[in-house]
Image (cartoon, rainbow, N blue to C red; front, side):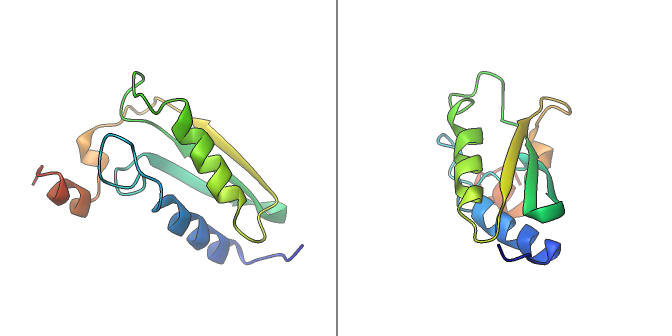
Length: 106
């Protein structure tokens, strides 16, 4: 297995996360502010801490699985752990300016 620079690997993870969309909102989960943390650990293990827009989100079961599956496909990744947290709770202020503009919040 090729050992990749942690920063380069994190950038690839970011690029993949920007291709995953909340099924109810036409903005990717990274721009929505659902990704709280991306850690590249030794031997190319990736840990992602994320949230959802609400505990009742219809994608609560599928979105973390999609994140796990897509990140695992990156060349050089050894293992992936996706943790869902509700603290702090997500709110609109976590969205990027581009996402807020796109959804008419600015």
